[in-house]
Image (cartoon, rainbow, N blue to C red):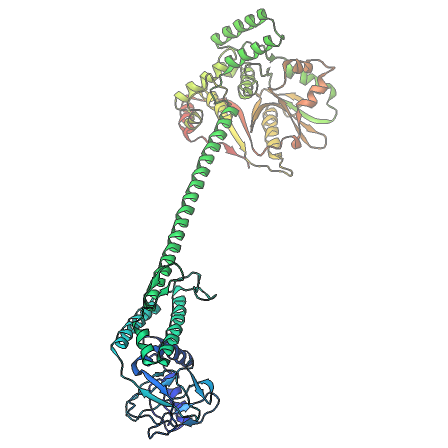
Length: 616
């Protein structure tokens, strides 16, 4: 009768055995009856029992195979791998069942083959066992004789039990990743526990071979072998152990130490990587800080806030450079320096860069040569102020303010203004005084409330603040984005035309082709430079053209406008069509009259949140 290898239940036929295995074991969770292994397939569990628990049952039974030519009354069922038939072997006083290991060869008729059959006992309770190697006689009969276990066998069995428990504990522990090679063969394992199991198989094979050799000898040889001391050499060092279990524990220490060292190296690598990353971030922050500081210094130098000196120092340096180059004699140097100091002390511009009579000359030119113009509007009489050696590169805003004041001085309604045009250092002092009154606090903070003695640029808001302090009604208009194709500003041209033509239309219904109005020029500011709009042309085809006074133009060049022979060349330089003004943003400051005291106070208060009128 077939017996179940897992639960040892007897079944009447092979068909019922297959049904039993499917219903009782393959449909449920399979578990090893000797250890805690579970959750595997039937084939895996069978292989586990036949390979892992073979030593335990061999030592429990301690059976020895002897040759015999007679048959016994009790039966052992032995199944050959090549046949399903069974043979009966009589064994006396046998109370346990043994299953032959696929690794235990038996000899029948002088040939070795594995015994894989099932053995049954006469008792009602059976257990799944593994039989020791069996020897067959020439007649084919096999006789198993059971021997009594000795004290040494008990010690060996206890040792094997301890090894099995430690093995189960290791199987239940988490898998550790790594690469470990077998010290006895060329196998490489990713898990130290798998390598440990593999080494144990090597040691078990060695113990089985030694046990077979000792049992095959005489009793005298067995006694001498038991008394002899065996030495096992560690494959990783020169240590020799007295037993295989000691060697196994020693090898395990090697493997555990290797895993711990690998873990330590990985943590050290992580710490080093973090340290390198922190150093890189620190270097990046320091480089970013240095770059920002350099950019800030460049901006300070560009806008004249680097404490490199103001109008006076720049004038002295340029004159000294001219003397060293031989362009100026020392006597002239001292004379010009004295005149500069006198002008700075009085606060009035010395007039060396001023050119007068330009608007009248332009009016005559257009009356004679404006055949391509439908209409021309010019501002009131205005003097041109050029940049000098003391303010070249940064004084355009101050020079345009001087041009505007020169025009306002000629108008009676602005008689409250200073009689003379102030010098650039005086204009800086006036702006600081206006800031002290509470006007434009944001602009004051931008310059750190200091302009005197610097080369700081000024713009539309500073011009507006000074005019407000003089009770002059001004207006800031911001053309903050292009309004035409190609980043042009046609709305700016239309606004300037309306500014000049609206005032002229109120004076007379029929205006001449060339008209000089009573309006002051318009301050025009864009990024990096500022100019003054002194007129506008309307061509026959309807296109508009602005006339600009540029502080960067030298006095000798501007005097060419006064001559009818050279005026045409200078007028062409003063013209700016729509395609010639392509900056992203423009601001204009236009004067529209005087302020009452109430309006002045209101504008000073409102200048805390000064906002320009945006078009569009």
